[in-house]
Structure formats: C-alpha cells, structure tokens
Length: 134
Image 1 (tube, one colour):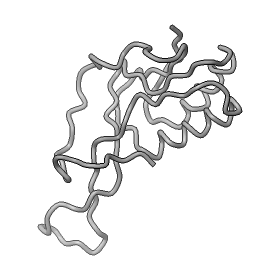
Image 2 (cartoon, one colour):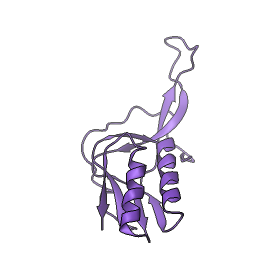
Image 3 (cartoon, one colour):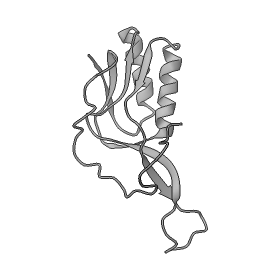
Image 4 (tube, helix red, strand yellow):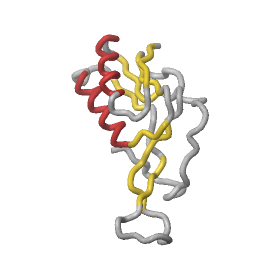
C-alpha cells in the first residue's frame, strides 16, 4: 500500500478540494491515461486495487505509471473514545484528486487493451474518470 515515509504534520487539517487541477494534467510518460473528471479523495487501497486490475488485464505487458500519491492522512477515533479526547490517530492515507488530474498512465501496449484496462480500473475509484490518449 502507498503511504508517505515522512510527514511534516502527522495529523493535518482537512484539505480544500475546490477548484481544478493546475499541474499533473497532461500525459508525461506513457501513451494512454486515466484522467479525473470530478473531485474527491482517492484512498491508497483504491489506487492499489486499480493498479492490480490494470496489471492483470494487460498480462503484465507494457508499463504503468501511478501519477497520484496519497499524501494526506485521515484520522479516526477509537470506538470507546469520548467527546473532547482530542484528534484520533492516522487511519489511512488519501490523495486529493481535482478535475483534470491524471491518475494512471500506460505505455507499450495496444490502445484497445489499454482502454479496457483503464475502464476496469475506473470502477475502483469514487471519482468519474475518462480515458485519454497522447
């Protein structure tokens, strides 16, 4: 699972998810990409699940680039914690995805195979996505 090695703040405030992406919006490495159309949080588990689907469908052919990384820690309190007992411990990590962000890139395989693999991966995400080519 993806997780940061070191963080400046262990328990950050909730991120602002407004606006559109201004970076990570163009295909840089591969020939095909999965681009977010709506905004939201994508967890490390969802990214790993989609990566597995893509690698299995392509039969480990080509190359996959993961363009988003879950930097943001989401905390949760224990079940027996009472009100006023402070902020909970980091539970999992999410990537803040805005419209226009590229999530995955693929290269070295046929376009029909890449499109189908990306469609299967898109089912794993809570944001709407679209398939784009270079």
